[in-house]
Amino acid sequence: MTFRSVSSRWRACAATAAAVVAVIAAMAAAEAATKKADKKEAAKPNLVASFGDWNVFVGEAGKGRICYVLAQPKTREPAAKREAGYAFISDRPAEGVRNEVSFIMGFEVAGGAAAAAGSDAKPDPKAAKAKAKTEAKAKSKSASAPTAAVGEETFDLLPKGANLWVKNAARESALIAEMKKGVTLEVKAAAAKGGETTDSYSLSGFSQAMDRLAKECAAKG
Image (cartoon, rainbow, N blue to C red; front, side):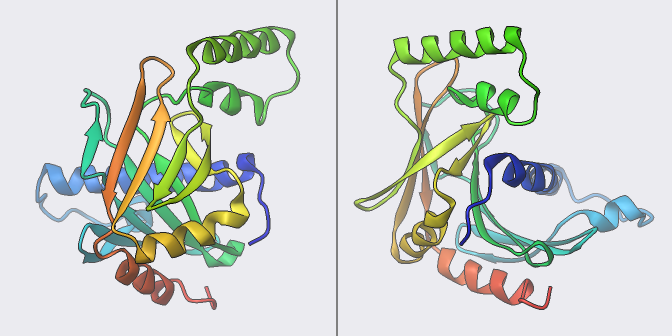
């Protein structure tokens, strides 16, 4: 897989990730009565299959079909009152994007605010000072870099806001391969305010979910 900048990856996926999370929240909230379908409703991703702990969603975007595999962690340690976390793998064939891995943490990750602010903005002396302060605080707290681990294999992650991405995009396929044959995925990240959090995901059904993802978002787009 060719390298994609974190900025372009985040912009392309963040809005649709939020849409999927919103759909899950809506499903859990109630079985609402059917309303008139409008363009906005049609654009929302639909749950098409579930395998073990993993769900497959399909939707339509301006450039074509978008497909997602998504799961929530089985456990979060230490327990805290925060928004839910998700593991999120997406395909956007029309854009040439396959097996893009990200993690929605539900809290601001240490170092994530600086990355989010610096990806698109023009140089700003005040922002540079703020960034330096943030980095200094992170160093003083000795916050460990975020990682994803399956068995003995560990993958470095890059924070942006409340999301994490595989630091080296070329290793996304290797992470997915490990997840297909693994039992548990552990994602560790330090919060900007607070200590380190470990999310543990069951990988039951993951391989089947990825097979369905490939069928739903075939190369033809």
